[in-house]
Amino acid sequence: DTRDVVDQVAKIVDHENAANTRQIAMRVEVLSVKLNNGQEFGVDWDLVFNQVSNLVPWSLRFSSPASLVSNNAANLGVSILAPTNGAMSASQARWGGSKAFFKALSSFGRVSVVTTANAMTLNRQPVPVAITNQTTYLAKVTPAPAGASGSAGGTPGLEPGTVTTGFLLNLLPTVLDSNSILLQFGLGISDLTALVDVPSGDQKIQAPEISSTDFLQKVAIRPGETLVLSGYERSAGQYDKRTLTSGAPIGLGGSINGTSNREAVVILVTPVLSEGAI
Image (cartoon, helix red, strand yellow):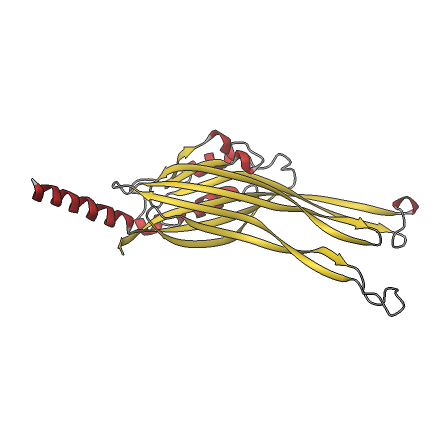
């Protein structure tokens, strides 16, 4: 009995060691769609996914209702794009899902790849993928040093601050014996909406205004399939003000021209099992 128990324990230990040392490669792509004129209501995600489903050899295996119509990351849609069985080789299926989705989005505007990141992790180990921007702003103004007579004899000191925005994606894969992957992902998206001037006497500082959302979910996905996070859209306004002289009111003459650009952001995650264990 003792020998049988030892053998069973050894098998369990070997199985856990083999499972924990499996390697998973994660490819993360961020696509940006500059919407065409007339796309006031954003991307019709229902139409996008229908087009993807018609692209042989790809099919839409799963799609959450929120992926059809959404305007912020809190209602982010989750879909899984899968290669049709036997339609392509494993090497072709590895990163082809993003190309199919890229093609489907092109009818709504100019599509570009914002960034591509590759991350390697072990089974049951989290891996972060961060794509961020740092913006410098005027955080503090120190008074000018006093001169010999007690009056200000120098220039005020300026102290910059930095604010970090963008998105942080945390991925936690669990590989099952069937080679399917339970993928838990947490997504945080933040945008710098404005730098507001805060006056105090003759001086002023800047205060950053940031909008942020968080998203946490878990899906079952197979190696080579593509997880699609869609539905996040944002607007960026640009204004050009022209007056007769600097500081003159617009009522004395001049013009204000404003344009508003809408952008849809799509995040694609494709997991692939690395051959063998470490």
